[in-house]
Length: 140
Picture (cartoon, one colour):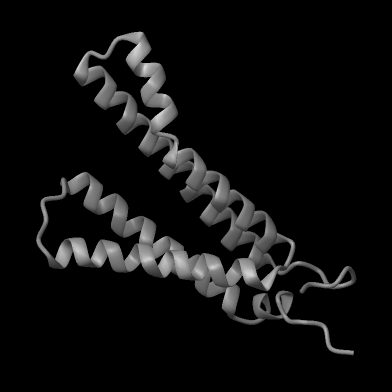
């Protein structure tokens, strides 16, 4: 864990900022997709309300990621590891989609690739010195 006397490295701030911006963009992208599907289906207000209650996955995912980013910013090593696992799973899922040649619109493919590369770079910064020392456990 980071100590009170230890200054937070700039690369940790940068990594958290990049991951945070990507989380907000992903949330907005998901919500716009949900709203677009509502508009296409011509749903009534009552159906919209029930759909909002059922489609809170993006909001829950954003909340979990925001919590992890706050903990990373505070120097919690477990949050750094969990975030790394999440980024690896996302990268693997995107690679599998493209290897399986599933149809993905070009704009989504471009966004996915840019987002994964940015996430991998941000998480890598968390494991390089001096960022790595921010997460080092205190030894007596």
